[in-house]
Image (cartoon, rainbow, N blue to C red):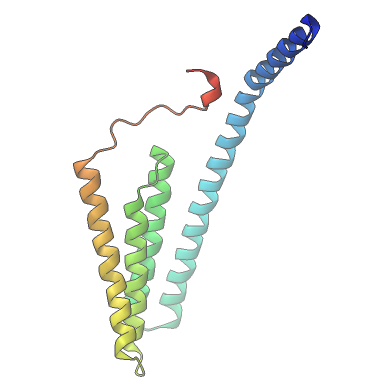
Length: 164
């Protein structure tokens, strides 16, 4: 039992809603971009800071660097590479996360092996974890080779409601 006035009111509300979406979308896009870049810079700076402090600790407190220390520095390097790639391409390759995970678990395995009270099954579990991560990385690399993602598309903030 709607009247012509109800339809006119609905149309006005829909036009106002569309106007607000058009007006606020650029502001939202700007805020997302600002948050994105500030976050990347903070993660990058924290990575450099942590790596530098760790390097200073290695050089100052010990006569030599252990393999664990080098693997930790390699983890910092990979995190820095991830930030750089994400900054340049706006994509996060999962394989870099896998490299970090493999390196971190390998570092853990080395500390297990160097520990005099290490239990054999614990070492086996950690080694199995490395194997599983390596197989997962192999599957990811094979899938990305066999089924490439295609050309990167331009960033878009359109939604299903935009109609195209």
